[in-house]
Length: 361
Ligand code: F0G
Image (cartoon, rainbow, N blue to C red; front, side, top):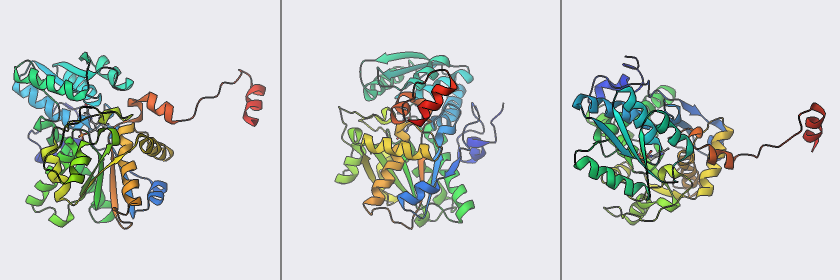
């Protein structure tokens, strides 16, 4: 079986299994972005583009582990609630591992590319008349009743795989700069990645491979219309208040009840990080900034860069920091958002003279 010993599975020692259901996930690029680095105004800025995974998001790192555990357990049906990316990854890894998949999606709130993936990879898709949080409530009930094996980020094996994002970033910074990043900025929905990266860093500290003061500051970014984690950080609260009404163009993080908050809040606080909310306009501007560097991301992904820019402008991030921003999903996941953020195609006649004339205007 290919994919073993590479990508995510290069870190098998840090994972609960030796090998998984693999489609060659992980080992994603850590791009340099000189113009963006300059305009944000930090010592170093790198983009860890998780959109370059097999199904176009970081979810593959969790699914390669989670579906392998499910296969070992011999479960019949895998299920998840999803804003889209989890459903695409579950469908692909489920079918690769020869298991049945069921996905619950908030009706009308999932980007086109993601539904298409879940559909073509053979998931049974239920469109729920409610938001993501309602979908997750139902899937948790189904799992509790023994109807399905849950593969949302509440499943700890998902987060084990996602730890490898942090391990790759640390290794690459060490190789390129001789130090670890001061800060990792990431979009937050259910706060799975925040929890996973924190766990990875704690394990490295315990193993003596990382000094406590070298742990990067975990910095979470949410959309203003779905920012319960930011609210909790700003209020110094121990618990996150569930938001019943959520809205943002970044549909991937249109989430009001971040289920991993109990693990993620300490991660942000104890690493000296913070959390910030950004507007949909700031997200789209950051999506354009990344696109200008040749990096195509979906809106939720651009939240990390939008948040970094804002924190730098507010002086919370210093100009001497070395920062990694996580971009979580590929541009093609949400073609409608990309087209809306880009320029309109111009209609021209089908002859060279007509084209030349048009170009003069
Ligand atoms: N970015 C993208 C592109 C996502 O799809 C998600 C979550 C997040 C960020 C948030 O990550 O939960 O670790 O804080 N998407 C889930 C889904 C909810 O169903 O695809 P988190």
